[in-house]
Amino acid sequence: MTSVAMTIAGSDSGGGAGIQADIKTFSALNVFATSVITAVTAQNTRGVSAVEDISPTMIREQMRAVLADITVHAIKIGMVSRCETIHAVAGGLTDYSGPVVLDPVMVATSGDRLLREDAISALISSLVPKATIVTPNLPEAALLTGMPVSETRSDMTRQAETILNAGARAVLIKGGHGTGCDSIDLLFDQSGVTEFSSPRVDTRNDHGTGCTLAAAITAGLARGLSLHESVGAAKTYLQDALIAGKALSIGGGHGPVHHFHKWWPA
Image (tube, rainbow, N blue to C red):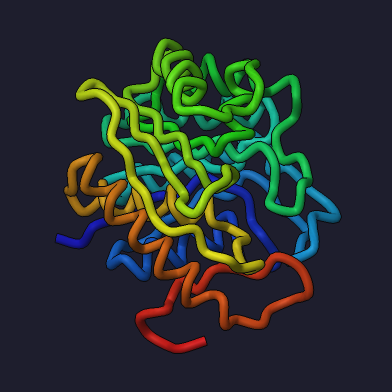
């Protein structure tokens, strides 16, 4: 049986993040990709210059069209920039019972804001309770919980507990924005806390890392892996994509990771 995943996210014209990164990741991990576009961004490796939201009606119609015809084994939610978009996506998930990965895209690698301030509460109330796992980085976890950016493991634990109490079944707080020689991600779920660690990669080509990790987790879940297996495999895939991506020369800012590093060298 062919494994199928859906990405619900914004389009990145530069090809490094968003829908484009998700489809590349699904494809690289042997999963057929379907998509629902929530916004179109004009961006490159240096930043985002314009954003145009897709109407809630069109978002619902995209979801309805795919789910009515294709068996989707897992769904990833990325950029949902405003309240209307969030409610449209939540409504489209009403009858969906498969795993949902919520990547709360709030700020791009370039620093550009991708989630409106007034939409944070809608995200927490409408989408977090539908999530099998929420995958914030350190700044996103702080914005979701209204706390300062975590500097310690106990800080991360408090923020994860807050997100779990909002209805998520699991939370992966990513340590890519932290310090130290290793990038440490902490997975919080009913079984406790699991640490996933990898050496920090010195590269400017880190655009789309959050999208890619969440998409790789989604691909694992679509293939029937457990949550812990999916996170571990996704962490390995992203690490390899970051290392291989160091040799890419795309744009003058934060270039992309190398999603297809197994197929062609940079």
